[in-house]
Image (cartoon, rainbow, N blue to C red):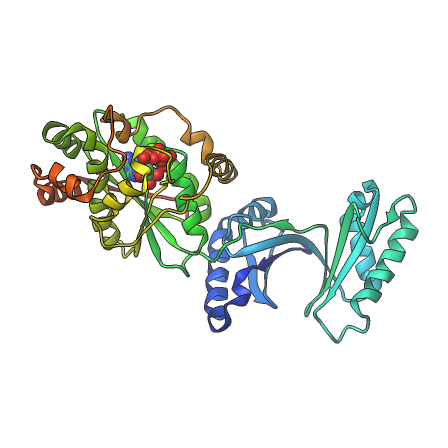
Amino acid sequence: MNEIFLLKLGEIVLKGQNRFTFENKLKQNVRRRLKHFGDFHIYIVQSTVYVEPQSDACDLDGAWEACGTIFGVVSMCRCRAAEKNLDAIFDAVMEYLGDELAAAESFKVESKRSDKSFPLGSIQISQEIGGRIAEALPQVRVDVHDPAYLVNVEIRDYAAYIHGPAVPGAGGLPTGVGGRAAVLLSGGIDSPVAGHMIAKRGAEIECVHFFSYPYTSERAKEKVLELARLMTKYTGRMTVDIVGFTEIQEAIRDRCPEEYFTILMRGFMMRIAQEIALDHGCGCLVTGENLGQVASQTMEAMACTGAVVKLPMFHPLIGMDKEDIVRIARKIGTLDTSILPYEDCCTVFTPRHPKTKPQLAQVEAAEARLDVDALVRRALENTEKVQVRFYEDE
Ligand code: ATP
Ligand code: MG
């Protein structure tokens, strides 16, 4: 049971006065996330979260994977704790990393000494341990410039910790330090990534989805709920508000000029999402829009949709290339679900020649024959709230 995880904090370290708030939030988040994997002692010392299993019943592999989804952690390592003396440290290195070391072509030992009372400096520790390794494994050469394998020794307050190369954490800031955001979630590739990116900056998120039964199927809705569930692996649990959008789409189709269908529909989405956002205490709306990707994602079109709401609208993907978005979707695990072929409500009433450079006055004239307030109110009444979570007991 002398295995332990060290999670290194990223930007939090720079946050001056707020640092303790940030650290406490992170600690809470780690505790909540690891609850499912057994009893762990979790504390922060010297800008590092220590995760110590308290019994052999802990699921260390599950916990390690979950640590990789916690925002605010920049890098992490799985370590062996040893007593703070060279013999114990060397024994631990050989026992814990011996197989990997023996298989490597070359190695280097890097040491850090944050316990300044330890009698040797970091260079001396590295030389001592490196020398003993070289003696024990003569076939593995020492290479201080470009080692194939890096052995880390950290002399900290309570113990010495030994680990191989650190792996990247989820990055960003701890969930809960950045306010709350309402994400407009469609079934596509982009919006789950947009939601993930805003969550990565410390925001808690809620999602809003518009669906148009019977033009879109029950399975399209299930797909979106599954996307939301996948997102909660990183973001923690959330509510998805599912808004019945059929009446609005039919009203637009029946009473407005076709070239404005999409832009009008998007205006309604924003108005409704704003009401839901305010209800959840969210301070912004988030979409997966991306400049130039489709007709409704020109500057002019986005200005018209933005004009109907007061909350700030954030579009984290605005300047990204599709291949970069796809790469993130793959990494966070939403891509395979996003590409399942179910229809989205946007595609159902797509105009043949959408206006790509609409003016606000024209858009307002185009919707003059609709009772906007009444349509918004009825859609809000026709909203279902679904709780989603990745882990059963979260
Ligand atoms: P995505 O891949 O996220 O579907 P997209 O490139 O297909 O994006 P659009 O369909 O034009 O783009 O939608 C732009 C944004 O509007 C989406 O990223 C999402 O934030 C929001 N949106 C579109 N359709 C819906 C919907 N049915 N419910 C909720 N939000 C939606
Ligand atoms: Mg879409």
